[in-house]
Image (tube, rainbow, N blue to C red; front, side):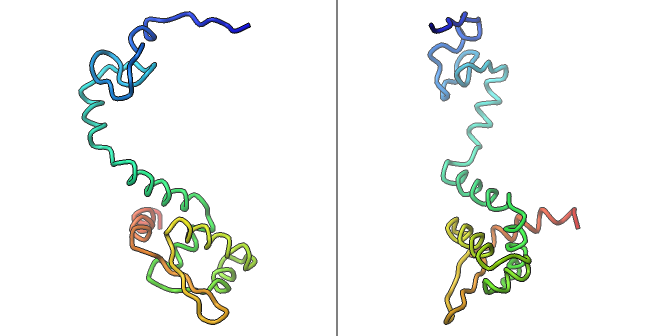
Amino acid sequence: MPVSKTKTKADDLCEGASPESHSGACVARQVRCFNTELVTQIRSTLPNEDTLEEITVIFGALADRSRVKILYALRNGDELCVCDIAAMLNVKIATASHHLRKMRDLKLLKYRNDGKLAYYSLKDRRVTDILSYALRDLV
């Protein structure tokens, strides 16, 4: 048998409110907003969904230590083959290939084949800029 929930004053304030609702006390459903003007202003400055997705992809790739090492190694425009990346990481070629394929799928790396060897490099400078900024005060 379902348990009934007792409605609170906050529920009454948010009843029927949508995330886009900026009038009244509630900006998002079930959330009481005390500074509607500020929340509205902040929301208007948020990047669009496509940009947020790109940022999420980059930070997702940076969430793995081995991938950060690979990106760091490629930051100066260097091009490295899979076997050299595996040696740098001290891992099997299959493991290095897995990380490289993941970052290539995320459109962070580009690659070219030269006979039996595959060479990887950064697709653009965004990742390099983020790494440089992160390392600025750490190194």
